[in-house]
Amino acid sequence: MIALEVKGLRKTFGGVVALDGIDLAVGLDDIVGIVGPNGSGKTTLFNVVTGALKPSAGSVRWLGEEIGGMAAYQIARKGLVRTFQQAMSFPALTVRENALIAHEHGARSGTRAVVPDALLRFVGLDGREDEIAGSMPFGNLRRLGLALALAARPRLLLLDEPAAGLNDSETEQLAGIIRRLPGLGVGVCLIDHDMNLMTSICQRLIVLDFGAKIAEGRPEDVLNDRKVMEVYLGAPT
Amino acid sequence: MDLAKTESLDLPQAEPAKGGSVGAPRLTWMERAIVPAGVFLLLIGLPWLHPGYRLLSLAVSTGVNTIALCGLAILFGQAGIMSVGHAALMGVGAYAGAILARDLDMSFWAALPCAALLAAAVAGLVGLPSLRVGGHHFVIITFALCGLFTIVLTNGGAFTGAATGLDIAPIGTVFGVNFSKLQNLYLLAAAFVLASIGLMRLVMTSSYGRTLRSIRENETLAAALGVNVGLHKIVAFMISGAFAGVAGLVQVYFLQHISPDLYGAFPSVYIALMVMLGGPRMLLGPLMGAFIVTFLPEVLNLDPIDARIAYGVGLILVILLLPGGVMAGLAHLYLSCRRCVVRS
Ligand SMILES: Nc1ncnc2c1ncn2[C@@H]1O[C@H](COP(=O)(O)OP(=O)(O)OP(=O)(O)O)[C@@H](O)[C@H]1O
Ligand SMILES: [Mg+2]
Image (cartoon, rainbow over all chains, first blue to last red; front, side, top):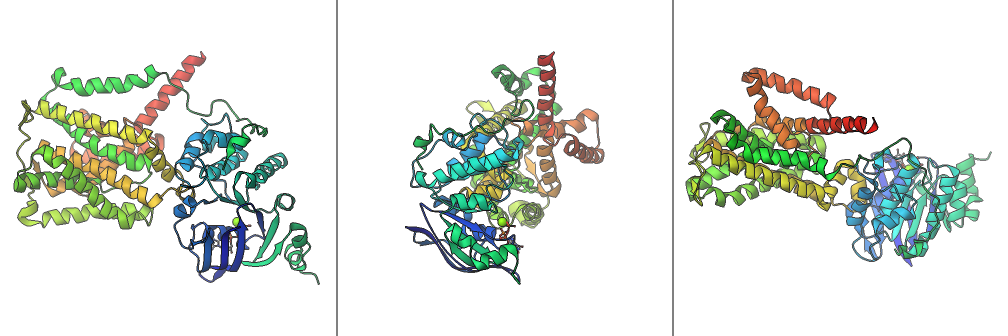
């Protein structure tokens, strides 16, 4: 079943066209990857879909309801939750307080409440509940960012470069966590530049370039697409 | 999602924290209780130490400011929003008290909820358009509120008493307690101070306080996790307005005469200064800030001009040396000493 349906989505910043008519459909048991060069509009797509930015044109439908232009907190409470490219936390608060904030707000309906402590265990932060978030090393901040998004009880999770800055073993752990999510009732849509990670966990890849979708399909097909190879390797002469 | 299945998930442990203690060191309940208990006893017991009239008056002034500062500490210390218009909100409470007593013969007690609600409503009206646009605009708009408020008061004719202001009779005798006596008025103010600190603690320790802190720490992330940032900013400002309104009401019954200059830009800046000086995130920060600013000129025998200079210099020093305010500085000092003692 299609849960998130984006049609003809445009976003312009003055003269800059960041999104140029994007079409996209994501189901609740999907793991969909979004790739593309720097500045191709990936983060902007998440920003517009989750209400951090207002769309310039086009529609965003979530579970059949038009949500384009709604406030970010309203969209999050409907179960569409995102993480940020820069690892974000509430730095002066403890890890547990961080998780409680997401837990106490977040989606209202649907799945049963998961105690934040179980979530912290799930992402591998158990035993660190009383640490000050801002004092943790980067890898743990990334885990926390994921735990916060999960504590908000998403039905679809939008992950913006969750593996950026992680070492190989941390990336492997992250892949393990992401793979489990559809089975737990959480669909995933993720952005990342790490092609090994993307091809290993995504069922479907979408390629953006200059704000437009240039390819979509199974990872192996997409990466062999001529247009995609041009974008990544430079135009063949 | 159902994490019951994941209980046995054997994920590798996160990398261990670098360095020694990361969180705040744990204090015993004795250590945590001793300062509040001492302050409580001093607050209640002060009249029995036979302070002079002057000292007791200063103590009431400190109390009045502390009530307002508790509200500002919730706004600034918890939600991270600074207002430099709090004297105007105190003025709303004070003028409401004086006008309700004059025109409707309302007592202090009947005017209490009115003053709180009215000041909260004014805060809501000011906050509604300005809090959405963000930090700097809000500071400027609250500052403008003071200017506007004094202009309205001075031009309000007989209704506001214009530049001369208004007079009000003392609270009088309630349940056999004569509040015209300064000692008893002091005890009333002390009770309001304790209630304000209690309410502040309630907010700080509740999940609502956590919501406000999430806004202080990272607005974008808070919104992305479902926090209604705009609403809670306005509610926090209204809560702080209610505290200011009550402070103003106690003040008008204490001074028995109010005029517009009490509620202009300068007093507002003082209030903002007091909260930063004392420590906006500390439970006893408001009391400390009000105490320092009220008593220091007296102790050092400063005239008003010198006092202003001293405040300015003091504020700069505190911001540079004690970013968390005097109370946070003292707490830090205590913890450092304790660590040395424990280690040796
Ligand atoms: N708030 C903004 N104001 C102005 N321009 C913006 C804004 N956000 C994004 N842009 C522009 O939109 C384009 C797309 O940026 P976006 O951040 O979406 O790229 P991206 O695909 O996420 O890149 P990266 O891989 O580097 O994260 C860029 O040209 C960027 O400069
Ligand atoms: Mg990006």
